[in-house]
Image (cartoon, rainbow, N blue to C red; front, side, top):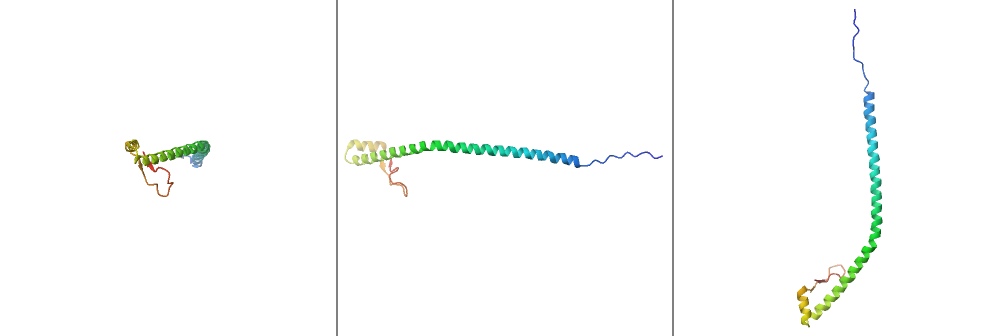
Amino acid sequence: MNKPSKTSPNYSPFWALGIVFLTMTVLQGLQLADTLSQRNKLKEAHANQNKQLEEVLPGVQQQKERAQTVSDAVERLSRDLLQLADGTNEASKIVAEFKIQLNNPPQGGESTQNSTKN
């Protein structure tokens, strides 16, 4: 008598590989969506930063102009004081106390900026 043989059934790897492939596709899709979301947020942040810079820039320009005006006034005052130091004792004391000296103008730049040192 022949006994029926017990053989293990053959399973196809299609479903296992299909599930792995589907899972990987879903994960890649989620990562792509997250990356695009981050990209949009960065674009918005960059646009907001540009708007803020445009709002601040005129104030910075005004402060630069004021600083240049003050620097020019201090330079003129220092030059006058150096000229007076040759003839008056008080001016000589001020020049010595604050170590005021006339520097050469910078090469290639504006000749009126930073030509005295306090």
